[in-house]
Image (cartoon, rainbow over all chains, first blue to last red; front, top):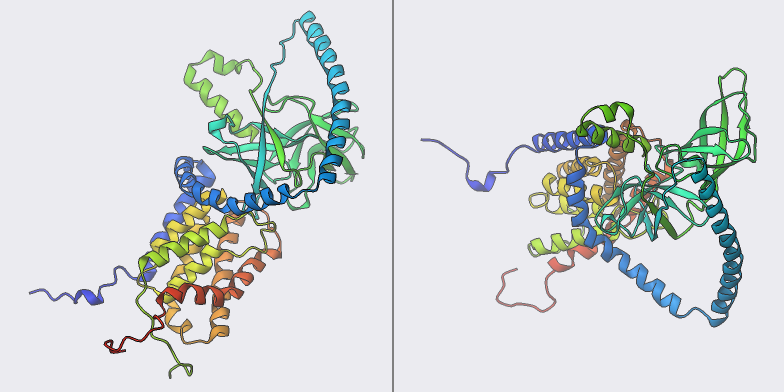
Length: 305
Length: 172
């Protein structure tokens, strides 16, 4: 006859065994997510489960803002109105000039037979809150995959680039800011067309131009714009201005630090640009089957992010 | 040895209370905090509390699932908070008998050590994944959470306190 303890004493596996089990489960997930990006589908489901709670958490803030907005004084509104009208006038003039210049440019482009640039669609979005991760620089936008945001879409504000959508959930999307340590953006110096790649500087809030030769023609005050070479960012968007160039003969590369132009940590509204530039397929991918093409496109996305 | 202070006999906890408290903690966590470093991690705090109070009801499985939810909601590496919360739950359960003997200050100190430990686990995970150290302000959040311990303890035990009116037919 077997002697089993009464159910009152049964407490399942030992605590240490449980800890080992859950810790190894977490570590497996971590490795799968960090190294192989296999956990995206699980993340999508979990994010959808967390979405109502997130919305509920935002409710009091939206409400408070609504009430505060209701009581905005008339004088303030008037001032703002006048200011906006003046800015509209100024930008209308600029827009007219741009229209004619764009028409001229497309005409010239047709003349030399270059591929016409595709007009990009833009979608206004509001920054809901900054990501709750002290290790990365991210913000959450109120537009998601349902509205047309895609992972890889560039995000700009009224001045310049602020970042790139790195994860599009159903109703919100996650934007990695330019200053994030893991984000790189291809840039070009306006003055002389010198190309470079700007990397996020992390906590310093600056950008860093790596792999610039020590004798490269770059100086403090230079304006940097997107070069558009990656096919992700449209060319000519302001990115940053160089604030410091350190040249040390003991190193091969110069240390170039740039200050982002756009209000990366400030603004509330942003534009999500969509529609990637039409690029010809890679030569090797074109020769092989369709599957390889899709994979190389994916790899390009991963490189761009 | 027994605690010097008079102890009230609490009614048994209801599962609904625990679920509701975790939902509230998640809600507070997802509030758009202006400064992330100073914002306490409410989920970790409530989890530590229930692990100390009800180690047989709330355990590592709850901690792990909550951690996954927080990971997905915050958009961080999947498993980071799951690992941190599981470790937190393990030590909170291991220390639960001991912690309940202490007065408020002693309990707060224990909670501080537990929460800073969980933060250290998360830090270790991110450093291993290649992130840079975000600064010492990282350890202010757990401190704020530990300061909130008495408030949370008082709030979460309200449903278990007995009603004011006397019931003459009840023995205790």
